[in-house]
Image (cartoon, one colour):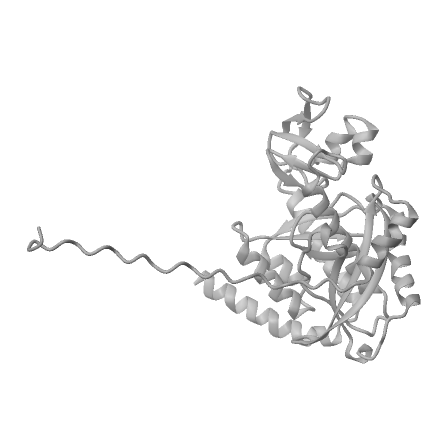
Length: 338
């Protein structure tokens, strides 16, 4: 019965969102997402009404053996960094909690071991992936507010690409009235300026793990995002989805983001490519290039990187794996042959 009830709720939200999306301006949609995020964040924080202490054993260069006494459900890895040095506060990007990647602003729920991850670690793979994902999130936030409020902007589920691809991506469908719009160099500079303003504000990326029901309510104005919520929830063993808030922008994320926008340094929107007609309209791929604060490049190197980031990054769909044919059992010798 519960499964049937949930399916009915999902269908009801879909029909409601189709009508709402046609009339809900961008500013109102952002306000609605923000309100749902704040309400759920307050509810989750209320799950820890009493102050309970946990032990956090720090790991890392010069930190082994450091034990911090923190507050369960309230203290975050960033809170732990503040008990160390300003260097750890300024340079920490992500955390490892008992070996699991953990956003810097996500509260700790149990006694644990904790490592702070930085861009200059010996193996920065996870940090680089989170940074590239964060650059895409920043670009999506800029695109949502770059056009007049009466024009709809639908961010699509952009495939993640490695840093070696040369550019981060944000796929988008703009209002049909903008189908004839051809971005100029001035348009790209304007988008870049919007991103740089968010970087200067040094805004936190606040994570919130929620049930599909909460996420569906937050994105009730977008049928596309609702379908994405259902897909991500079905792929997660816990059945939850990850939301992030940056300023008043709430987004769905496929993985952890870095701690704050101020960790980005050199950042430039390099190209807008048309991908042709898709099920939601004219699909465009917006690309960009960025380097973090700790890893800046000389302008000559940056120019070469930018030229590469202008070229369309072609994302191939994942290959379908064909299962091997079932093994044919060997025939059992008959009694006559024995």
